[in-house]
Length: 279
Image (cartoon, rainbow, N blue to C red):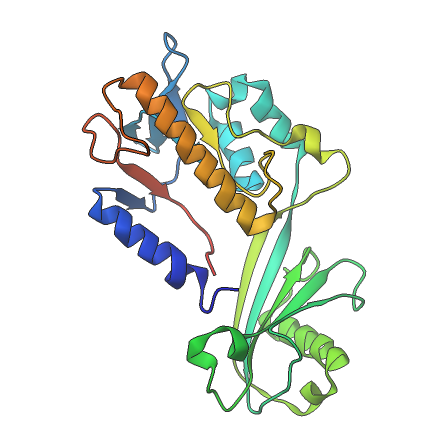
């Protein structure tokens, strides 16, 4: 378990390191389409509104709902059956509630999976006092409750969500009955989590695509590696990066290093940063 947020412990140091290798992150650029080179069959440009960027290779490290939106708007992607099949997949909603209480409540484990208080959702309790160094010596309890398949909870007002969370917490640990919330943070992530349902496997994508220079990464990408969830996202990301290396060697035979040569002048050093949550 990471002692801290994934953003501050993994992604920010990783991004800082890549910046030292001339990698450029373009925040707030929404990808809307792609330009196809009919001669090579490769994607030659990424379109972000009225702006176009030349590319040698592209990795989609996005969720299902984001890719579905891309396919609808892309003249290039909607010509391929593998991308059209993604329309048969679905996602569900997440609500993440971070609470600071006025007292210390004994929570058995750092991470606790819960169910049984609603037919439509499952949830976890995370004891941030045990997980984050910044909360380790806090005299009061700081926790996070994540509700999965929270479709029915998403429209509720913050006060209604808070009442629901405290009710569920009290049913798990009686001590929450006498605790008062002194601070809260409620975040909603619609259509952000993959819905694995019977029959969905045949619609999920592989790491390589029918475009020679377009690759996929994510927890819903089919791979022979037996990982799951965030680990699978990481593994498929590494696999996609390795495929980019092989692709770049085909495009630029003089590139001989093992690993992505970030200093090769012909390689595009650009990442479109459209992440929604990294905690």
